Each structure stands twice: as structure tokens, then as C-alpha cells.
Amino acid sequence: MSKKRIGKPTKYREEFNEQARKLCLLGNTNEGLALFFEVSASTISNWMTNHPDFLAAVKAGRVIADANVAVSLYERAIGYSHKSEKLFQFQGEIIRVETIEHYPPDIGACKFWLTNRQPEKWREKVVVESEDNLTMVPKEELDAIHARNLEKQKQMMAVVMGRAARLGIASFIEGNDEHGLDEAD
Image 1 (tube, rainbow, N blue to C red):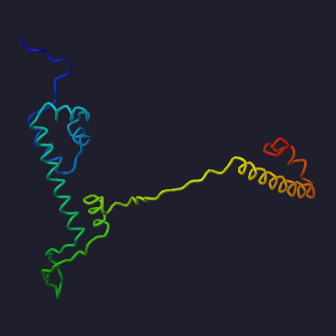
Image 2 (cartoon, rainbow, N blue to C red):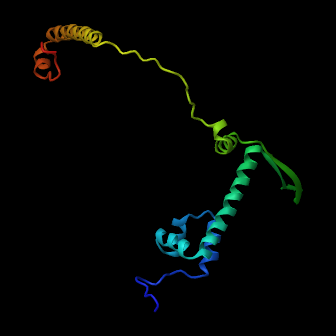
């Protein structure tokens, strides 16, 4: 007795394997594959689970793409040279000259390479190993500091209010002083 499948029939076709491999060579993610095949990203995940050939094709494309990028990053980090051809025009005639172009090492590529390949030696996070001896300030001392600060604040408020009175705006400040000090502070 065969099982009846529930839901829509799959859109998957065997020819999708090669298309997926090529798309992954170009750097596509599951979301990119989903857009190309006009399905959801979860459908791509299901195809990878249910169709081993599809999964193998996706992995093959990604491995080659990642390897190519790694080679390029490595060359960029250490510097490289390559043959090139320059074109010149002299007296109406085109002249081709073979040259060698040199690219110096790129510090950003070096840093990226080393921080990812040898993070224990090249990480940016600095670990400070020290023992802090925190001493607790007694409550009485904190209360005394608070009282001194309140007294300074009251003195400054008196200066401000004196200036406000001389300018004729004292009643405006007193009427709008929601954060003023009172004796309970």
C-alpha cells in the first residue's frame, strides 16, 4: 500500500542540480536560489534534505566559489604580479607591449586573513588580566558627600535666584521650578 503525499506536488526537477551548482559558483545563498527557482528559502532547504544530488550540487558550487575567493584574498594579502598587455599608438600604428603588473600586499587583506586564520595571535579583543581591589565606601562617608553636594547646590541656587531677582525674573523661575530644592532634600 503506497502512501499518499499531502500538499502540492514539488516543483523540484533533476535539471535544477546543475543550475544550482552554477548559481552557487556565483555566490548565491539559499535565498538567491529561492528567487531563481521561484520558491521559498524553506523549499530550497527541503530540496537539500530530500534530494541528495541537489545538496551535492549546491555544496560543490559553494566549495569552488569559496576556494576561489580564498585564493584571491591570499594573493591580495601577500601581493602578486601578473602579465599584462599595454596598447600604444605611435605614428598611427597600434603597438602591443607585454608588461608585468605588480600589486603590493594589502594591509586590510593581511589583517582579515590573520584574524580569521590565527585568532588567538591576531585578535583585536584585548584581554586584560588584573585583579581589582575594590574597597567599599562606608555609608556614613557617602551620606557626608551627599550632604556637602546638597549644600553646594543650595548655595548655587541662592546665587541664581539673586541674579533672577535683580533681572526681575525671579517670580517666573519660582513658578516654573519643578526641580527646585526644598528643606526635605
